[in-house]
Amino acid sequence: MKKGILLPIFSLPSRYGIGDFGYEAFEFIDILKENCIDYWEILPINESGRYPYSPISYYALNRNYISLDKLKDMKLIDKLEQRENSSRAIYDDFKDKYYKEAFSKFKPNDEFIKFSLNTKIDEYAQYMTNKYKEDKKYYIFLQYILDKQWNELKNYANLNGVKIIGDMPIYPDFDSCEVTYYSKYYELNNGKMEYVSGASPDYFNSEGQKWGHPLYNFKSIEKDSFKYLIERYLEFLHRYDIVRIDHFRAFDSYYKIPIKKSAKEGFYVEGPGEKFFDELFKYTNSNRFIVEDLGDIRKETELLRDKYNFTRMKILQYSLNLEKICDEYDDTENMVIYPGNHDNNTIIGWYNSLSQIKKKNLIRFLKNNDCYDEKVNVAIIKYCLKSMAKIMIVSVQDIIGLDESSRINLPGHEYEDNWAFKLTDFNALKSNINVLK
Image 1 (cartoon, rainbow, N blue to C red):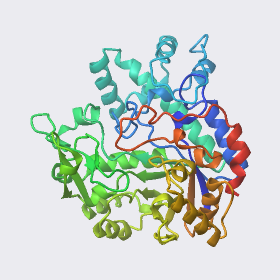
Image 2: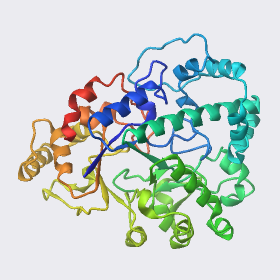
Image 3: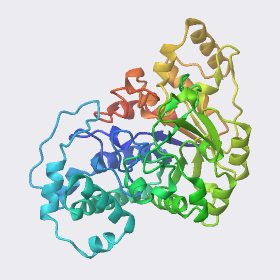
Image 4: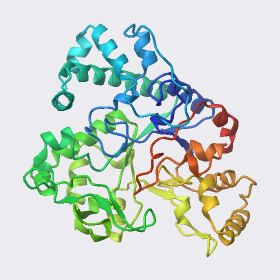
């Protein structure tokens, strides 16, 4: 079994308010190498607001992730002000003054000129210019720096035996360059949404979830042989070693919610299914994909997944039946097992939420499987290590043993701490990482 750690870029330690592509990211890769960890799962890094699964562009990277230290090394910044090393990521404009200073000192070279010819980056820069009235070259410059810093980081990871798992968000934000420049590929009526994205009630949220994204006009996309989506997938395969397809269910059937109704009042519509993947796999294969086959899944979704031999996911917090004291989800080699992922509570937080009877049953289950440990997070990881899955991914919080206050996201809720968990250093990780051995 290969092993990986889930840690978003924004969760890396940083002296500037939010994790980025700087030296702390390289230090994290060193830790992974030293402990024979094969994968780093990072979640989406596209340009977006605070919610990373609502990208503004699938080709532009998030400006928050520019390393100021590296800009200073390029002699584009003179002095840097440090911030309090908080345990929560700060989303604000602190870095902007440094970006503008760097832009004013930057002298375009041949590499930059070549990069600026990228049509998708040009579209993004024009979109941002129209919205914020800054010089278009400023946004191209920021993306040039991001691309340069990201490639340096990924190359360093790969040279040290670490592969990057990145996420493909299913839908963009309505206010995005995707919808602005490719509106014919979205379900719009005179430029407005009548239906929005979401999920039916399931174990993530009993009320369902209303995400609010525009839905795809798959008839229009199919007329162009799915080129609009295929280009995006090929870009992500270039950017990452493994691509995790968010909300795979939508390719089989997707959920439509009338814009003025609740999530419970939505309904399912047939997705593109085999037509899309048959076209995509003219250019690649399924070996570098993981599909998020979670939530309210029907048999047809499983058949679509298995036809292309996609690697599936298993979340232990969902597969354990603590009333029957069993694991209800059969293991398979072509699977990634997680104690919990970014949408779950931490192991400690999940355990704290259980009734006394379920806590006793969990301890009994772990003892029955020879995995008991006084630290329940350690015991759960031990159980996952026994799986026949080809990969196990564990969040940093679960390695350290943090409680519910350190979860990454609470789905379906406007929670102020969503997408804000951040390490202040790597000391606790280094002290506890042996649990993966």
